[in-house]
Length: 248
Image (cartoon, rainbow, N blue to C red):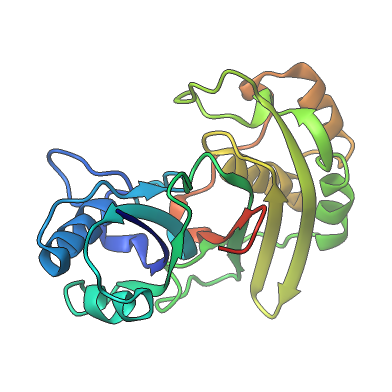
């Protein structure tokens, strides 16, 4: 039995998230069907984590086990021939039998993209969050410094979370402005439910002038979701990378 690790890029616009569901089309479900078609047997595809409806991925990772002898380097081409054009397998490698895409991950990087303009974009509406108010990038950067490090992120956790611990280590938080786009890039050892979208919503409130940058520290200390900013919509969120101890 072989264990295959896939790298997956997808546009989440037309799907109800990553995880398979009974009454809606998901990305996991379509890839599992493609695996069954090319291998002749059903597979349990294990993702590095879930993404919500409308969220995108540049490098989601997921593994499955198979007895098929298709060379790993040919698997992307075979699977892509069975998948819609908004889901692409960009890589496949054979990994150790006990490798687990979720439990062996040591970190992830997300990007949240804002379209900051008076007029919304027809082209970028599914790939960014439209914010018409002028945002002060320097204030947002100042506020972001309070988020770095190992902290209890209860204030930045959605109500659907079942996490036993809400302590996470944010290793990187950068804010980049390019024209009308503002990108918030976050790398951490793990993320709580809606954590990136709530952090982004809070930084936007700071950028608008609705709260001073140092209030982010107070929000963290309160450990209460009610004090943080809004959960920004899913279409601005991209899963960029999943990290493992060894390159697989």
